[in-house]
Image (cartoon, rainbow, N blue to C red; front, side):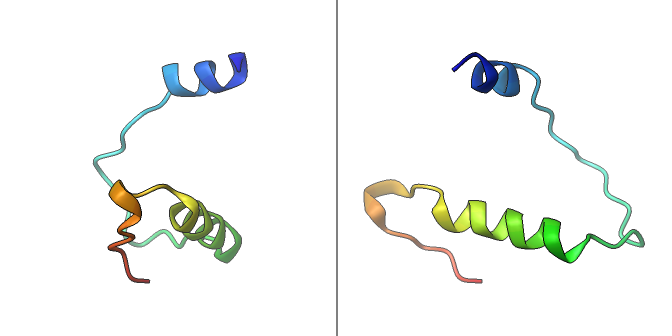
Length: 49
């Protein structure tokens, strides 16, 4: 639980991105998997990939 609290306390929001810098396929797949597993209000699951 402490690891989770540390993670939440140290999070950051990036507002500027380098569009010329590619994202590794493995990272993108992990991000999409996390988004797929994230809860939605009333299990509505409104997203599409």
